Amino acid sequence: MNAIQSTWNFIQYQVLGMKWLDALVENMLTAIGLDTSSRMIASLQFFIYDVIKITALLCSLIFIISYIQSYFPPERSKKILTRFHGIGANIVAALLGTITPFCACSSIPLFIGFSSAGLPLGVTFSFLISSPMVDLGSLVLLMSIFGPKIAFVYVIVGLIIAVLGGTLIEKLKLEDQVEAFIRNANSIDIDSPNLNKKDRLHYAKEQVIETFKKVFVFILIGVSIGAVIHNWIPQNWIEGVLGTDNPFSVILATIVGVPIYADIFGTIPIAEALFSKGVQIGTVLALMMAVTTLSLPSLIMLRQAVKPKLLGVFISVCTIGIIIVGYIFNYFAHLII
Image (cartoon, rainbow, N blue to C red; front, side):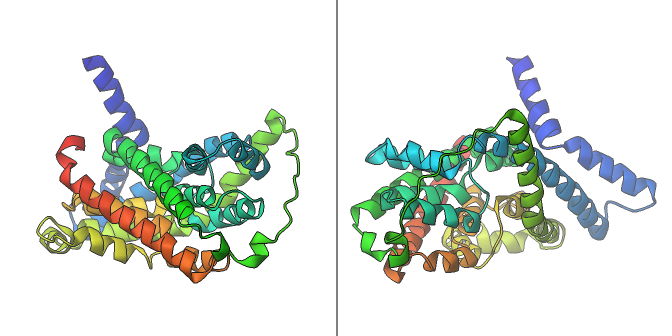
């Protein structure tokens, strides 16, 4: 048992968490005469370490996930979804969302395609909720920072929100709230080309390059904010605003997350810094979920596809779900930390 625990600790802290890299950066800064105990240099160390770590994990994970995703193009995903009915279809849609692009703005075109293809509204929304909130990459990166329990619970809870949210939207019978140009679109079935291994590797490589170009700026911004929080903002101030003494911390974190536009990789450094300052895990995860699911740019894009009533229902369902999850995580934090 001790051997298994030791092996897992090595994977979590040295392979995924890259603590060796943190030590290497510190040694390099010290070697050139910089004092890593000062806040300025500590911020620089945090920035260099987190940018390299997240970028390395990002590129590796996107390559693996994109290779898997090459087996599930939109046409095949649609065919898979049409085989299921009821809540089973919502579950499959939420699971398919975990192997799609990493932000809501990338998922919305697929959502429009699925809606045009005539898939049930609730099923398409289960996909839309799950895709930015939960993905295989976030599982690995969350595991590297918060540990396996929090990572797995986050993914499970995200899938539950996606399934229940899509199911509720389906029950409300809001099909007429999808814009007419989508409802009246003619769906054309195009068979997916047969890709060989070389084609799939090329596709995965192209996805790494494309995604890296889109998200790297958000990684830089997220890590910069995380470095400031980690080294410059007093812990007692953060705890006063988002700590246990503020019963509205989860609601505040959810509201603050909406105007921020980032993906899961740009959000995690901020979450990591807040967590290290004593902010409860439920509050941290509420912020992450709000940023990835309810960001203002993605809502503006979604408004082009759905009418205000349906958009309002989507926002309400996600917001209420995120807030409930945040408080649940805070209440049961002692069981998973």
